[in-house]
Length: 157
View 1: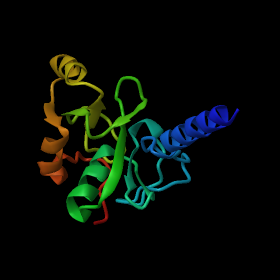
View 2: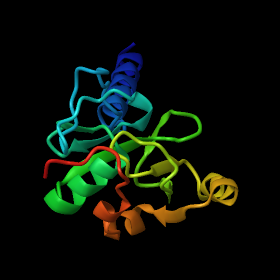
View 3: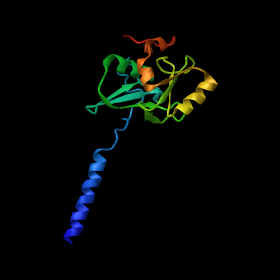
View 4: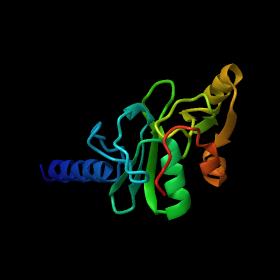
């Protein structure tokens, strides 16, 4: 009986520690209520939204991948996770492992024209059909992001 109790307690401790160390998940964005932390525009197109989860656990929300990229470039925040939407599935994917295509014909709220893809293969397939320039996460963070902006809305910064 004593052995069984110890075993159950050990299993419980393992399960609880697994739960507490689970990967950071994207926060829910409230459409037309939450605003972009870079340009202050309302987040109207959820499939274009992006977000950072800071080390403190605070989410920083963006209406466009370009806004998040510009924020990272200028603010250099310490974050645990970053998420973007896959251009094809519209599901949240990790910014860290995504591949990107920038093309002036890709519509995005702030006209950066950046699409994220869960794999390099999917990004290259899209690029073959639609053109554009391919970027890794590191490459996009080094790019002159302001030069990507089309003639759509302009930041007030």
